Length: 117
Image (tube, rainbow, N blue to C red; front, side, top):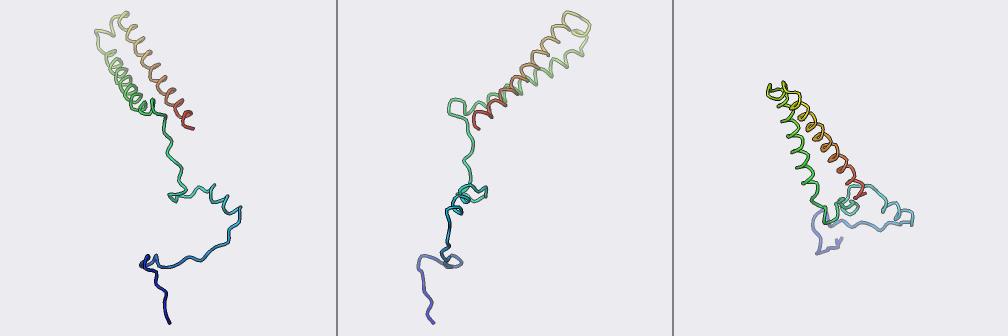
């Protein structure tokens, strides 16, 4: 008995797969599959060029605003501010504005998701 030899394959890859009959429906289902094979994987969603690095900037703004808000909240506990109504009102206003900035940054990041969809 003589075995056919394919010089381009070795080991387990030497097994040949028999042809299969496919219908148009099979091909359509194959293109719409959600499998994890590399050829079926979707491209990563990225933002267009001018704003591709905006997430780094927004995250820095968010962290800085949150840290600043925290510092002002800590400052409210000191007598220099807590005993003076005018200073206390000013710091309360600043804390509120920093909270608004944080909320706006969150809304901007939510809007960015709509750009890539």
